[in-house]
Length: 123
Image (tube, rainbow, N blue to C red; front, side, top):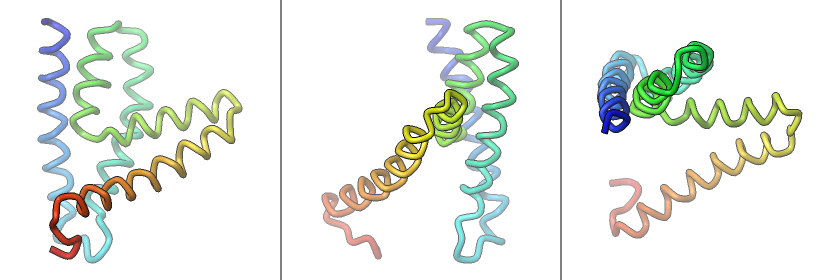
C-alpha cells in the first residue's frame, strides 16, 4: 500500500506540473506544440538527474519520483531514458528502432483511435 501511495502522490504532483508548464507556453505556441515539447524535454532532463539521486536513496524515492512524479509529468522521459540506455550499451540499432517505431506507431495508434471513435480528426 505504501508503494501505491508514493506513486499516486508523485503522479498527482507530476500531472499538475505538466498542466501548469504546458499552460505557460500555450499563448506563445503558435502552430508548434511548445508547451508539451518543453514538458517532454524538461522531463527527460529531470529523469537523468533524478535517476542518479534515486539510485543512492532507494526504491521508495524511485517509486515516488521516477514512476510517480515523472510518470504523471511525462512518460516521454522514460522513453528518453530507455533510448539513452540502449545507446549507452552500444545497441545503436535498437535505440534507433525504439525511437522511430515509438513515434510512428504512436501517431498511427492515435489515428486508429480517432478513426474508431467515429469522430473526425478535424473535429
